[in-house]
Image (cartoon, rainbow, N blue to C red; front, side):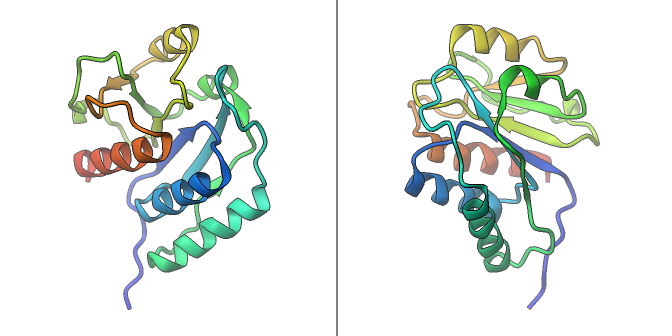
Length: 165
């Protein structure tokens, strides 16, 4: 059986969610090629702690299941302010308020591509403003409907994979 190496770094910045949905989201994101997980504690984040050991086990199982060579990393939870200090990424912002529904591939560089997904209850207005000031951010509306966090992750990663590969 052939194993696959990712050609492009794909990061997922997300709000931790309840356990069963969280495991499912991590599994599917790993299968869809995420190379780094960046948990963010937003204003409306309900689950504020993660069991990193358990998450790493879920990641390893999903990595093996999907024949990947590299096991994705998971960082410690951080604030949005701390996350936005990392300028070494192309940021795709899943924004319900955006009119844009296409990714501009000309704005995707050789830097890692990071998709940021909001918490249950969406981003606060202040968070939305902070994200929109990130240099080169691409806001994108991934669906007309309000999606659950784990569904938004799968949808956004599928769209991004299609656009950048």
